[in-house]
Image (cartoon, rainbow, N blue to C red; front, side, top):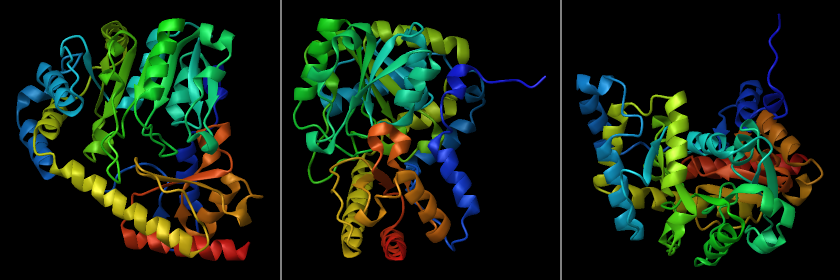
Length: 392
């Protein structure tokens, strides 16, 4: 017998970063420069690493962890929200640690959706925003994000039947992959009004709130009056504290939604190892200079890379947050499409970036380049891209 996958799984294309990893293995170029995945190259803070080592030495951390996370971690997250956003949270009911926000988003859809039920999803988007809906048996209703509109959705253009049938409205700012930000809280206020009118939950992915540039400061949707009645917000240690491989994040907000998610997770996982949770407590309660330093490092890299790309004739938008440069394909490469452009660039020049189409249909014609390499490597990547464009 040859097992077959479910239709939900077979209907999805291969995960784009798996495809990029395979292409890297095939590349004949010397010295791969990988700007594909948003995986921070900056080290985790030394005090956090030290806290992990100390926690591992305690045999009590080797047992199954509390399903809803350690009370100390939930309190630390609530305290961080109070300091950062002036938002008051009940650690017992309005805070839920996660094995990374990616897992949490996918599990939220599984916990809430009935078969065929809709989710309003931006396009382009972080892949789990779309794929997680499909795997949960839901139906994504796409909200196009265009450069002309600052990569913001127009909630007024959502069709009446889609608004009525959708259980979740998903938003993500600072945005992955575009790096777009919201000015003020107008979009968040619209989203909450939409929720009140149509009875859907707003899921706000705020994983990049601390990686902002040029003085920009990202808001939380929970800062708005009554938001906890209608919204949940996801965050992560991955980008803020360069802890991507540690697999720990959180969701806060609406207590009923968190209770459903916690119940669902109780059937599928045993939570986050306690030694990782103890280290996460140190990250969020200890010195925060590492956060400002990381943001400053990405900003310097952004400036160097944008300048180097301009030097080869590729003028790209300058992001104000996140860790990505989202750029239209160079004029010479537009006939290739984003996937062919990226594949050839990897195979011929050893520069890895993510094709826009990997983030949804509205991503075609763009590429995403992650600022996860030192300035010298980014400048070398620009030089190689320039050589490739000349060959076209």
